[in-house]
Image 1: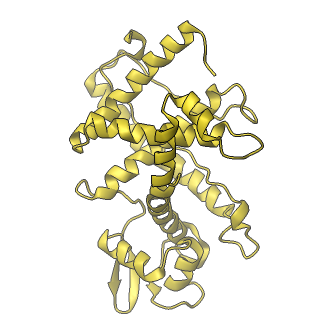
Image 2 (image 1 turned 120 degrees about the vertical axis):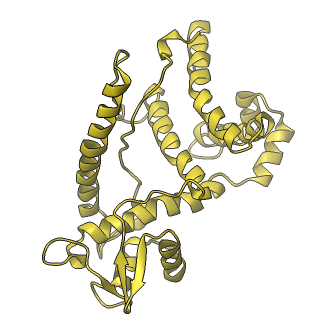
Image 3 (image 1 turned 90 degrees about the vertical axis):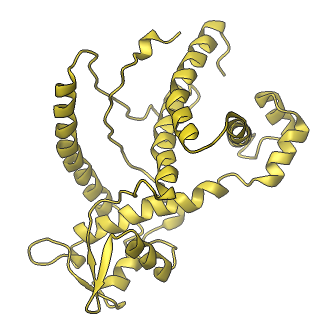
Length: 280
C-alpha cells in the first residue's frame, strides 16, 4: 500500500495523465463521467476482492469496503450484479483467437504450400484442412460461428469449396464495435505490467517494460520513424508470434490447457505534444 503523502501525490498526477487519453475514447464513444465512475466501482471491487484475500480466498465485503471507500451495501450490490471477468471473457477470446488462427495459417507447416505460403484449405475436417485449422487454433468457439466471423470481417473468402485467407493481421474497421473492445486489451495489458512492477509484494521479479522516445524531433522525422516502426516492429512481432506458436501447448496432443497462461508483447507508436514530466 502507498501511504506517504508525496507518493500519493505522485500517483494522483500519474493517474490524471493516464486518464486523459481514456477520457478522449469515452467521450467519443458517448460515455459520461458518471457511467465511467460506475464502471470504476466495479473495477475497484474486483481488484480489492482478488488481491487482498487470505489464503487465496476472496476478500470479505467489510475489507473491500475499507479498501475502496464504498459502503458494504454497495460492495454487495456490485458483487451480486456483476461476476468478475464476465465482460472480458467474450471479447478477449475474439481479440486473441482470431490473430492466433491467422498466425497458425501463416506459420504452421501443415497449412503452408511448398513456397511457405498459406494454402487454400478445403472445407473439411481432414488433417491439414480448414476444419483441422479451427480445431487447433479456434479454441472453444463453435466452428460455424468462428467461420462466419472470419467471413464477415473479410479475413477469408470462400471459393470453389475452399477457404482462402486474405490477411495476416486482424485490424477491425473503425465502424466495428469490436475496435473499441479491442482498445481495452493493450491498455489492460500494459497497465497490468506496470501494476506488477510497482507491487513490492509481487511474486517473482519485475516484468520487462521499456520504451524509447525523444522530445525534439520534427513532424517529418516523426513520420519517418512511424514508417520504420511499422516495418521493423511488424517483423519483430512476427518473430515473437512464430516463437509462441512453436510453444503453443493447445496445438500439441499433450497440451495442458488448464495450466496454460496468456503471454505476449506489444509495440506501439508514440506521438504526443505533452510532456509527462510537466504534469502537476
